[in-house]
Image: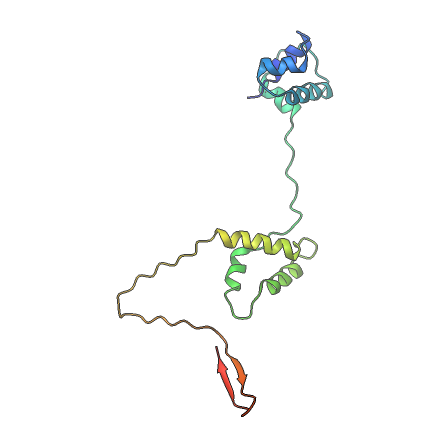
Length: 160
């Protein structure tokens, strides 16, 4: 809990320096200075009004700031993650679609990628598979093949 009333009492009633007030209340000199400045800006003096308690004083000196509106539209990262599993889909393509859909409120590509990578790193990379021996066969598929042309014979072979 803040010690605003004690700070103001020691400042105006006892006339102590900010350093001595800080030592007596065990808070920093900067906090003492802030409390005294905010009380002065709010037009408060000593003694405080009788109905002024610590919570009300704190609310008066440190008003809550309303949250700022979102400047950027948040991408649906769960959807993006699923889309990236499809063949031929890249993060660049997904960002272009996102930027087109949220014109003026879209993140730039670098921030978009940074946010996505932060989400991707938080996902677990394990997949538990329960199977009986001999029940299933697992094959590693590398994807599309590339043509390799033999310069001498012109023969085309497909390589993975």
